Image (cartoon, rainbow, N blue to C red; front, side, top):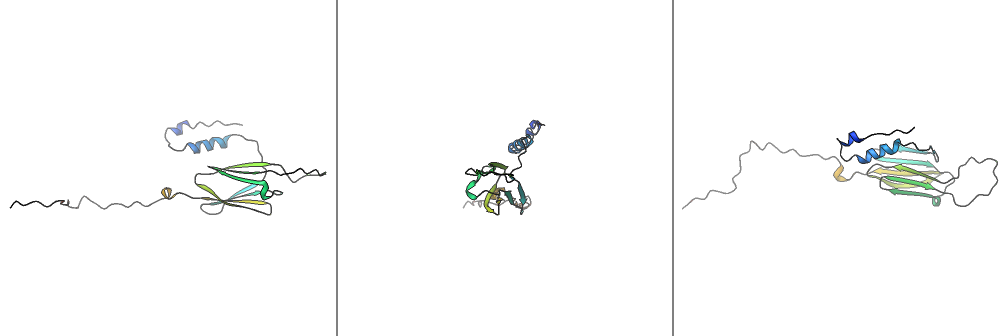
Length: 156
């Protein structure tokens, strides 16, 4: 089922939200459900996030994490062929690529691989000019007497 969303009425009254509309349109597209490898996204703190992916059987050399503007791509590929004869193969060993849309100003802080779990730490870092700031309110200037810039000259 594909839904076509029309954001044109919102374009008339909003400025600078093009990326949000593009993300909503991308999210509404029906994509084949590929749930491998399984992953969790957790909010650790106010501005800290962690993605945990189950990548059993992959080593650090077989995993690639790429941070592009507003996009995080995690991919993995197993090298070498296993010619063993299996009666049952339940451990997936196929290549994968998982993409995560990131909000503006979200940076990758670090990544670690421990016991088959890939942990990717993210942090939202707002630039100083985007943080809320307090604006000083000037006092009432209507009640102050005008200042004299130059003294009157007396003729002698």
